[in-house]
Image (cartoon, rainbow, N blue to C red; front, top):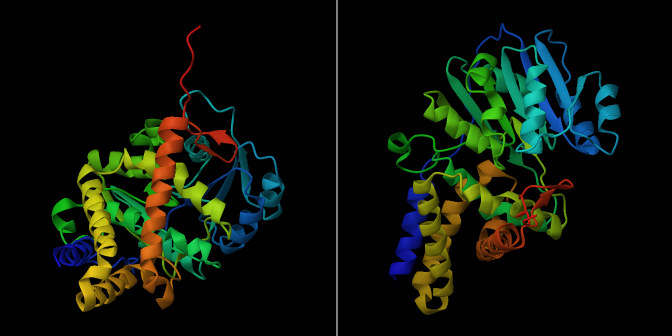
Length: 357
């Protein structure tokens, strides 16, 4: 019985607050720049850039071609946006941070919006994003609404929950703990604040770059905000292939855990362990187990609705999602720390140990 109580209680405490995008209508009077790092993103740019096209003279869109081998540059130019090439990747830099940094150097905007190429805006979403940003000493990150079109993509569910919980946004104690991190696909910051922090150069070697950037900004006294992009910003992460889902999450999850808030990492460990313990002991709990199962499914559905297009039957299958999470996390640890094989878009993201001369 106690495992059921712990599973329900830890879920309730960790996901007490729902995610929501701030609905504010500030009139924008300053130049703002969307910066899109793109490495072999020709197909994704065809979906994103039409949602960014605007007659607004204050809007600038920059695509940073990060040594692409496809038609990334040609696609970007066909939409009339500014294209910037990255210089050769310096030692110690991660590719995405290097691309963002060079995009920022070419930007004219007083507000910078760093945006992943596999996202796209809902109608009016780009305007809503800029209008909701408070400027001043503020940094905002957005978790895009995950649009999934296959069964395998739904296995991202628990990963999203852990990332969301790590931000400190949803916990019952968020007022005391404050924002503990941010989301990677979309970061908004004033240009003056960006450069005063040192830009992406300050976190150049971090794999989960915008989580590290947000935590750095918070440590320097900036107000950090994070929210769901439901109705504003969308993404489709790993298409329909199970291998892509596994490789995609394995790419950053175990290494990202090293930069996450220790207290929220502990909370996530307790929560996942509690839910798994409940599931293992479920047959012995009888009707109490059925009740606990229904309560957990309800609690999970509240936050999953804000994160992506999960359906009621996805929630009922939540045990599969938790066991898949453990499998991929173990796989990520193996590849990252033992095999040193983590790669992304053709680049190694784990420095291999050099042999002695």
